[in-house]
Amino acid sequence: MDTETPAGLSSEERAFLDAPRFAVVATVGPDGAPYQAVVWYLVDGDTLVVNSADGRRWPANLRRDSRVDVTIEDGYRYVQLSGIVEIDDDQERAQADIAAMAYRYHADDPAAAEAVIDRFRRQHRVSFRLRPRAVRRDL
Figure (cartoon, helix red, strand yellow):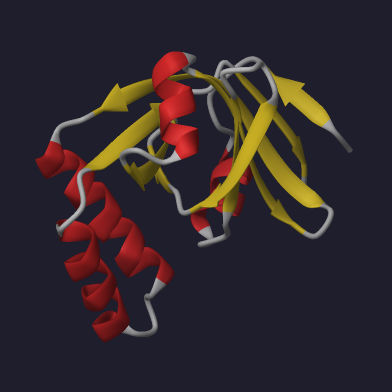
């Protein structure tokens, strides 16, 4: 059943988000059109963290208009978070965020995680923190 809550994550939603699924980030382009990208994520308390190399389209969209919808799905089950992101340009935190994501998504192959982290260290990274204003789900 599709339900919506005003904010925060329930234990059921948090358990769903604990698995390293992929998220789809939906932003608003400069012409008002929607733009979506598939990304890694982390959950930090009631905050969803996503990260990117700076200069890509979806981070540029969020710098201009910080409204976002993020959907994490598994077949017909999903959690959708909506709100305004906080932009974090601090390189130490952004690099730590993407390293944590690399280990999360390559848990079965630490050498692969290290290779990804090494590549990302050469990039200017930015993290976006979403404390959702609304959470919709069907779990």
